[in-house]
Length: 199
Image (cartoon, rainbow, N blue to C red; front, side, top):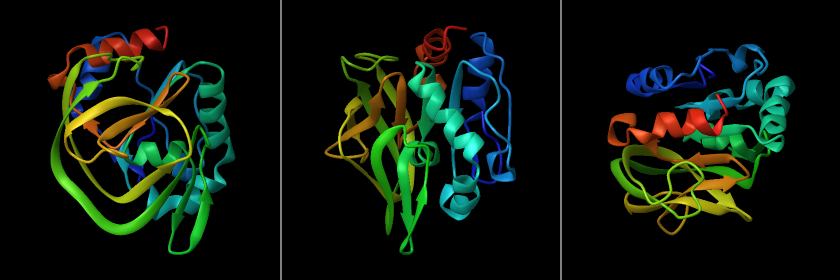
């Protein structure tokens, strides 16, 4: 789990829930050049990747490690800033920075504020973690994610999501969402994530 200047927002209850479900949580700092540790899954939290886009783009060990984990069938779950790191690129102030390329999409900073708002959503039937499951959380961002393909894991009843009230862009066993899901709103979340990682 990255925990540094770019990826710094996690609900403490989410971390506690993952540990209680049997996960060994390992922290590392991609903006300081650290690569992806040996792992079965990764939880990419929110934060400020736009402020450290150059550092993230320069850390090939991190980006290629996350992409390879996804391609090999490992679980990658990203929230807001983590979603942006899963995109092909991040565009800001006329500059484009390479990201991991897990999700066929471009993240663009528009300056338009979305949120802060509470989110209510329900897992789609195709959601590999939480099918047909009600969840709650929050969203707050100044970016848009523009996908070229992919399916979605959540129908948003309250909030914005990625596009057309859909959130949780999925490919293989990777999912990126603008929603910061709160583990106490869905007690299955942590155990589902740990189980999907094969822990």
